[in-house]
Length: 202
Image (cartoon, rainbow, N blue to C red; front, side):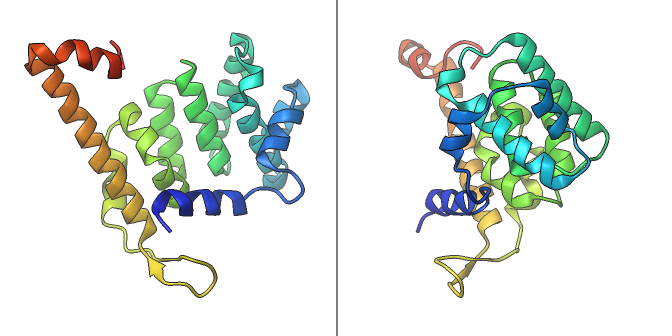
């Protein structure tokens, strides 16, 4: 089982019993009540709301999402970060979705990652490939030398340093992409090809 398959398996196991991600995407309608639940001090209530909002943000049927809705969700996420409230992997995925829509800036994402480090390192390492282009490599340094072991292949399976493996894979890909972009600028004959893969501002 490779790292991607393992990430998906663990992600699936973390979903709320009785509500799949697809079901959440199909049934979630954004409302002020959902946002209030997201800001709840009760971690269980927050977890369900964060799961639903993550699904709402990523569901193709909801696009385009109104700017006012994205702003409200971004403000709520910033509030949880600022108040030091518990955060889940869904909060991280919310941040990534908001960043892709231009409603969560680099400093916002860096604050979110910092708030989750030491609390939910697996989630951060799982998202490292998406985070690196946004906030750079500083956050990943501890993960590259992590020795924390996780069982793989089911209960009692072999243990592997999954955080280190995911971080190392993401860092290799990040460096490779940077090298390709550098080559695009160095060799004129590559520029037209590179534009197809690396649009301006990408």
